[in-house]
Image 1 (cartoon, helix red, strand yellow):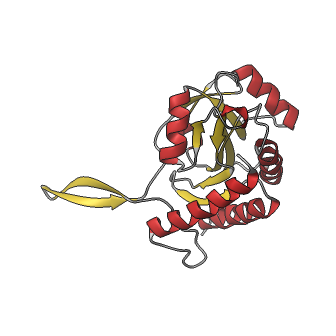
Image 2 (image 1 turned 60 degrees about the vertical axis):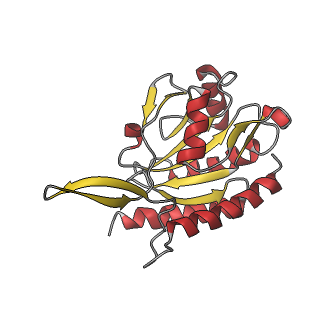
Length: 218
């Protein structure tokens, strides 16, 4: 997908998500994005319907270190998620250059992680992901590159992180995906979506990471 198309789609998505969430920043706090979900609770012996924020559900993938990564791995962490593939001929190199900026800025911060999902698990094996991470200069577990079943990766991308991830044989590399970076808070809520192909978009992301970190120190 051309970077310009990705950026345009991202702007549309941002407007939609903020509209759905029905809230904006208050007291310098970031909004919670996504459609609220109805849940049934029992209160004083009676069933009542309440609404809760959209959250990232549990998942199960495998990292570049060949170990299991679940939602619990990110417990107590602010993290940035994205979708890519190693042989991507279009926007992925820009995305990884920009995500490396995030990694370098927050390296060693125990509250911040990065989670990159390959959307080409048939090619991007554990060994391929490990080599890719090492070539980027990434070590340790602060930035995890994960693979798994293709249907699980696409489903969590589209339904949970609310970004495009789909096969398209007419597209360069055979898949289309968003260039978005998604900011997730410690409660697994989506707090921002940013253009991961541009310096400007990632500058905004890092500013919002700082705001989110501040929320947890107040």
